[in-house]
Image (cartoon, rainbow, N blue to C red; front, side):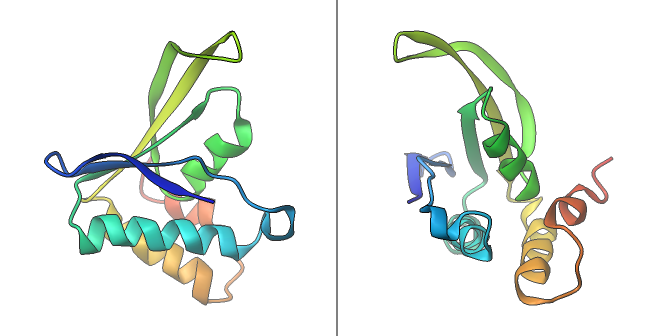
Length: 128
């Protein structure tokens, strides 16, 4: 499951969230392709300016997934939410329309070509 949420069409902004996968497809290209298709829909078809990815700052797998998919870490919103009676710090990531052509090419290459390079490596190239 993946949701487009916090939709602000007048601002050209939306968030991808509430992401979870059945164990059978975890760590497969199915996950990457489903996010890629939604990213492409928002940035290429709807011409949004910004996609956001937010997660519990302690969720290392989600944070790594965001970077792997080309999102840029923006910071931590401290005590952003209360979840199950506990403070939650939220890690914020974004992907902008001007970054999309590079990320699009990287994800497409990783999904559909068998060259053995990791998607994280592709998306981190040229950012340093």
